[in-house]
Structures are given as structure tokens and as C-alpha cells.
Length: 100
Image (cartoon, rainbow, N blue to C red; front, side, top):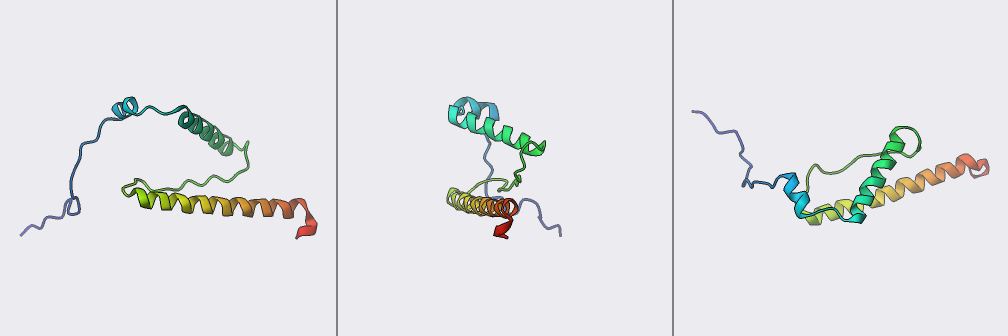
């Protein structure tokens, strides 16, 4: 007897609108476009050595639970602040030998 092993956990399938439709329906705001532009420029500078910051790419591949996504974002902000604090302290120790 052949057992079904495909798509056992799929609850439903919904057709998604093509990206072009979504972009027309929900155009980016000026603030969102500026954020994307500035972030891409900053990443470019980091990758090409013009900015010595550390670039870490993290995140879920998709978001199904908005509440969980907001909690994840809060944790990322806290981690970013921790890393920034650590980098500042390291720079202070490097720049001021008396602090070592």
C-alpha cells in the first residue's frame, strides 16, 4: 500500500496577487522609499569597505504571526543596541589606553 507523504501539513492554498498589482495598490511612501535608499547605500559602503560597521543579516523568511514578528523586532533592536554599546566600549578602550 502506498502512503501519502506529500503536503501533509498544508492547511490551505491561497493565490497571491502578482507583485506589480501589490505595488500599484500599495505604493511606497516617501519615508519608506528614503529608508530603503539610505539603507542600501549604507550596506554598499559596508560591503565595499568605506564603512567599518559590521553588517549582520537576520530575519525570518516569512511572517505569519504579526504579534510574534513585533516581538522578534523588539529583540533585534535590543541586540543592535547591545552590539553598538559593545563596539563603542571597544573603541573607547582602543582610543584611550588608560581605560584598559
